[in-house]
Image (cartoon, rainbow, N blue to C red):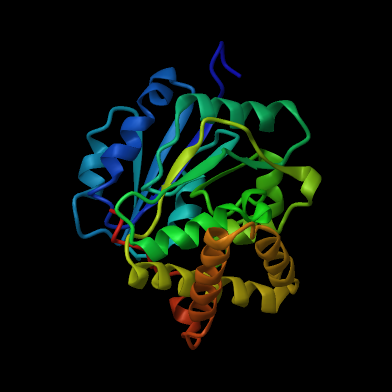
Length: 278
């Protein structure tokens, strides 16, 4: 801590995020004014105005990475700051000063190595089926207890030592979550960050295919997928016709998301995302 404000860094990998980066950095205005937190935007392979917009924000350090790779962006941003702890934040996620303060305090004042703020889904404008999917997903307790899925997670210095550098895998949050035992990580009861969901079925399927592909790739290396537990928790969440409908929609989307054939290993670090919510 420095004075009454925590010290640390916020790392934001960004690829062609001109439409949202200003909003994300605007939410960090108070944090930037503290003067104790480095905010690093790692623009990678950008061909839009992401870097220009970020550069106009006082106190923001912009790193340029030539290739469109989230992995390369994360590692380059790590090299650009010496502060700890570090919050890794997707470019379309807004985090409040209060939430960031709580996360950094938890990582500095306890034995925790990793943590993230609470989150909530924003399904405004989404189709009925997409809303049903996320209602079901919200009812699965295990999904709310992991570091992945919120677009934001943080590591202490010791936690990052265990990570080393980010590997060329799809799903950095899934990878990081699996590095730590239950007593080494926590989801904190903070003001939630807002995760804007895909708006269309096509966009949701694209996100799920990327997610399941990355998860499967990592599971082949380290083993231990949690599909069985997810199914049990999903079934336990059914309380009537509406929750049964939501669960059925979830199963259909999950099944469709898992059916896509694999892709070349050279593509695992490339950017894929939902543009329907931007």
